[in-house]
Length: 392
Image (cartoon, one colour):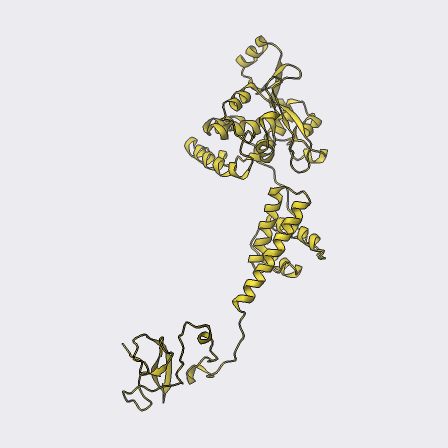
């Protein structure tokens, strides 16, 4: 332990080495009075030798943290004094970060005033924050384009980031020629109806009812989350979708007696919604239950089933149930354009000669078809018919 020769304090720490005729000499700094001294004198004596004037202040004061000392190296390592570089202060970094966050918040408020959905706003804000954290200057399109080009993202992901930043450029009136990303459209995964039924049966009461609703109606998860009990018509066996997403159309969709029974068994919420109106809360719960069921059944295909998968499946089934009536599929999905519906009706998913759909108007006809291997699909309240289907 070394005592400060000035104040006698034990609170000393090592402050680097100094070289005397090629011999390293340890120097110390007193944390109490700021006195700096070396371990031995210049001639090797035991007396401590001061190497700078005494600072009469505590080292935890802001003024004591300043120092104009430069880096000292040995002669074998090169020059002793390096050029002093002015670093970027923490205050400048903090102000720059706050400015970027402020711009993003203003953009979010702008989107909210324009009537964009909450999910769209969250999605765009998340992407812009990722670009900012990677070092992109949102006011300079060249830096953003460089980040997008050099990041190890897929082409589809890069296209999403570019689309989000393009909306920010439109808001800030920044000219930017967005790069083109050619992303081939992939065919969605369509599970077997038996796999869907296994998934619904294995999930909890709320999640199973939600999946049954998505499977029968083809609504989006956001639309299903905003359904209220007043949208249900138990006499006519249908449900009204009055909060369509992505600028779609409202519609009325028939539902089965099975789904009505499942809905009636759910507890009533005080806010009037059937499910939690925050659609993101359903995803984590569903994923855990789905993965557990896939592991228990030993069927990894079930892990590929998502909420939107059931929308594709319902559109394809409806297309074949109606003998290729694409307009009915368009109404079911709430689309405004027919070419959008074409992405959901997957013509090659089932071969028509291997898929048979029949309708029963009486109980006797329904029992006969069930005995022949047909499966119940839904009840058509408008025509008072039961729709059943069977694969050959």
